[in-house]
Image (tube, rainbow, N blue to C red):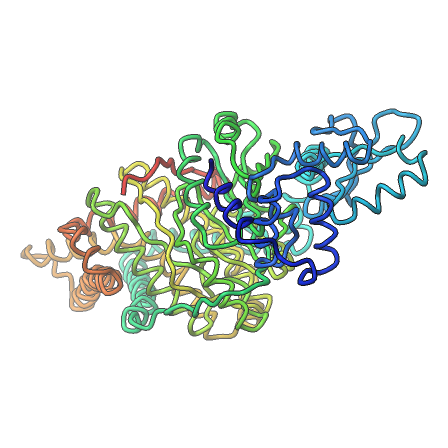
Length: 625
């Protein structure tokens, strides 16, 4: 006997809940389910779950997996003496824009399959089944127009029928609503003119005034690099003030929570993903987990089918077309989200079981302007090699230092790509993610701020594995930097408007935290060149580099050492003793790590011109830690 049935039998043995203690709809529902012949112990167990979660017996019965949807609705159809269809053929459903509401509330669907009489696919409920039976008996002509089906079949039919129209809307919605927020056009006309003019001026200066031009450029770049370190330095000094989390208290009326999980070539991750999602401390009947797959990714889709996932999981297939990016897939699946709150996870993520609870408590106690909460990401394979060790240190500094610091002061927050929790109403109002931005998280964090919202941080972490090879690391990092370049270009299309929307201090912090990160990556090897060149000239009898060049080189050396010190100080101060021990001697590789970062930055800079929307996916495998 299964654990579920053992619990149900034990619950039933302790006695049924007195009918007088139940609402009328729940009494009718229980009577009907008993009449339909469902196991009384299972009904009683589902009833207790329904009272605890403020749902219906039917909802708990189906979400528990004790009864299959097809079996359940076939029995309801038999009671009503109506035909049953477990799958609605494609040619039965014609797309209408208003149909998308059925993705979240699949009660019934108009069918157009060439019959002379219009027909409907209906999803009945147990609590009103008796009334429906009476109406059908009074009007037998209606029986010719009705087919009983399942919520799963209705949603699948609506997803299929509206795929092309929905994809077109997904790709173009942000551009149509507010073109200034979209990365679809990489450079606006004025930006292209200014960048081209700046490059031409620099080349002209090198031709006619080479020494003065190089000196002026050196001063400007050195100042910008130093400025980029200020936010990280402030975060390092304040790193001990990270969020401690909201007290998690039991609630009877928890809302539906949508989980969007984009998958591509992730067939080997389905078992681990299922285990991680089933560990979440949230009522199963109020989870809406959408596994988002590309249409041509047959291996992942087959793995999902073979896994026979429970009812809270739904597969959403994104049709081909538009940019092949994660944000495009997220926007497409958002059309069917049922939750009041929503979170993004990746295939390899293992969130803390109470993370949804902490996010809900934080949202519940905060003003509605709090639109997003970032959970920290923690690297679990930290001891694999020096790359994962430094990656873990970097993540500790970012997610336990910089982002909480920015959130605490309500500065613009460049969100991480996963474990972002949203109020779904705010997410939809700002038109969700930019499908053309390959760092959609950072872009969305700034756009929320521009539209009057702000982002916060919570403390319960999500475990991830870092890339273990140099090639995978550079591919991932170049995609991020390319996305930050896109975000910066979008933000600076109208610098004065951005400053007015978010304020002068926020404007400066944004430039330092995002633009500064890009500059520090691009300019880091040039600092080495400056230091080595000046040192070589000082060893020669002539020419003398001069006092100005020597001072600038000294500043360059300070910038290099400060970069390394802040990196280790910020990350190390937020890591546990166990993490530091597993990190070992990885710090000695930090100069190589920074040069890898610079290589990825220049790679991203070049890709911005010839492949701005190319999404270099990170391959995942089940965690061994």
